[in-house]
Length: 219
Image 1 (tube, rainbow, N blue to C red):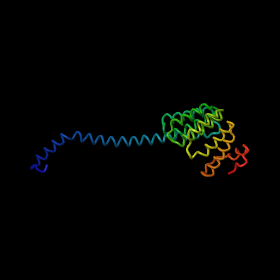
Image 2: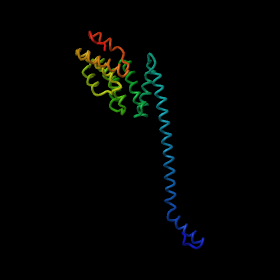
Image 3: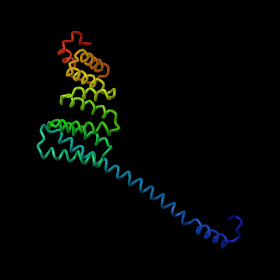
Image 4: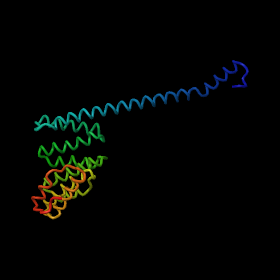
């Protein structure tokens, strides 16, 4: 523009530039503004979803914490579980609701429903700790349902180190049911060692060893 000598020439050059580039410039500004607005809208949506999931889960906890659930309260709890899992799938609340779903099913005497809830959680969660916890609980339900072989296979599929003492304790229970008492003693001793090393609370292990007649049970 430096070589232009008059204001008229400069103005004419600006008009020509705007005619050639103005539309794309406006489009760029609009797209950038839409991107910022869209991102803020998405953040707001996510925050609202998280709040809704939290509220529903708190309601579910309140219901599940009752000593006894009447039919209408159980129906309300199941509705909340469905809403959390359908509308907030993949969240921590959805995973935790599956654990509560299994607990409620066991309280209702429905082992099949409990196992379905736990197996579903194992298959879909990306949280190793909750997956391991679900395996522990599934193994216990399978054991209570008279399937110690299945319970042992479930347990051996993998549990994180943070649950290793509980895993060893449950393994001992399963081995007792299978009549493999020597292996059960080893499992209980391992559970005791892990409790002492890692501070994982697992009550009753020493009593189980005593009941098996292990003279050197105390470590």
